[in-house]
Length: 308
Image (cartoon, rainbow, N blue to C red):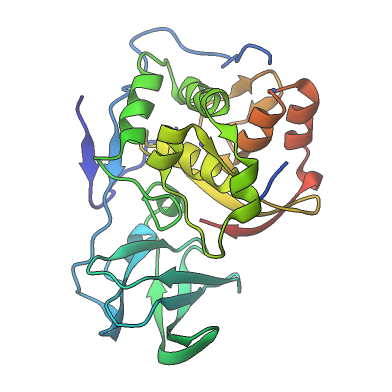
């Protein structure tokens, strides 16, 4: 299996924490005839070259590749954790908690192009933090879709991630991106079941591990969303992991952007011009019933807070 590795994106082929809680045959309309799309993984690999940084040891933020829609963070201190706080043009405060590590972790610039306020804090004890830096940096993204193609702390994967290989096998022979989205979405819906015990005991600051979800076949909404997003991104399909509320429930779901036009399950419509919401958790729990898919399709049922 060939894996295309992209460290810097020159062109984009736009093709998809909580306690939460359909089956018509999937129909990806308007599939074109012919050879179809390549199912080989396309991985955008984040890097930390150190050409431009904010802060310094023990907490450093590498902004060298901000144009690619991400920054890289590393905390190498002795405290239990540190936190990076990013505020972009939309005014939303994103907090990323980092345990001590020798490695950098990618953080997405989901507020798009503009100036970002960046603040770094080190945990002292309990909920007390010491300020390590307060600064800012500029980011002019080469494409608005880049933050949703690279891996990040919430949707973490690499060439060695089994979910990447499973995605490639799942979409093999698909005619277009719509059919690839269809296959991956239904793979997750049909192969992961909701873990009520985990939902009741999930710790604060929990982050999903996509291969753990794949291996166990169970998870909470955060796990469903992260696994689906990782599989789709590895197929060069921009996918947002979204966090907010569905009714009164704190919830995670995804939205996908592709240029194809058509339907999945006759109720999920891709227009080729907008992001399309998909909720693998609710679809799995509701067994893709018509009523649950109609619920997912109604934007008034969702209140978005954060993008990752």
